Image 1 (tube, helix red, strand yellow):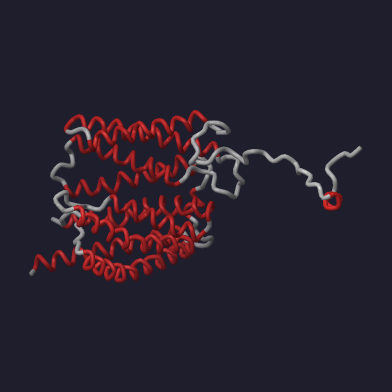
Image 2 (tube, rainbow, N blue to C red; image 1 turned 60 degrees about the horizontal axis):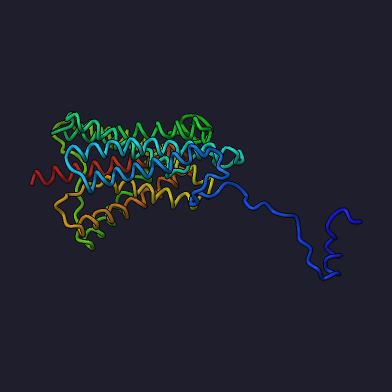
Length: 348
């Protein structure tokens, strides 16, 4: 009478394979690419996210391709509202599903889901403000709102889905090196120097790509009509936008992927995502041929990827202070050169 399977040497001598202990058929819930509610920690949130996501996408498609006028606005608004709820449900599901991960692992929602929430909510708010007519014929106000709204939604999404969800703390997002405040200032200055150093290679690369592809990108900055107007634009482009984007793309997105995938993958992915989101904001003219629009988008993407890599590298080495400093200096330098070029042309 035996109390267990034969020992390894007994198996070899008999020549008869002996089955080992039965393994579970599943090591966990199905993956994201498998639609199934079996084994899901929060099936209600999971199904809600999927269902409303499909409904919201369908409404947006109807608004773009099969409606016009007031109907298009209604379809678009309804679709955006549904998508906000859908992405919220999907993020909530992943917070529940990943709560059992080890403490050192990332336990929050996937960055792409949170980005979907950000894009849907930002677009919805901008659509509602646009319907009021407040921004009509006010390019400076339009620019400021285009900076403030995403920035506010970036902070809100990180707070809701990462900090309150327990996936990341504000301290982990900031990654400030321990020590006196002068050390943080030093990190900011190092980042600023790196951002300024990046400007010339980016301009050379942009000029080369533009010449090769035969495309001239349109500027999304409003015209500077006064000192007050210029100061407002400078604050938006050099202070507000870098703060919101660094907290989201480096503090949240990079940190999440770093915990899940490691430093190298997080560097690459966060830079590509950062460039991709900025391509969505490129100002193109509907009258331009598709080849010209495609060339503009490609140029913007290729020149922003190196900036994303540098910002992530500075964040990895010296924390949020350095990446914010690099972003501020980079935007400030480009804005200064754009203003200088415009005034030179006007003077000529």
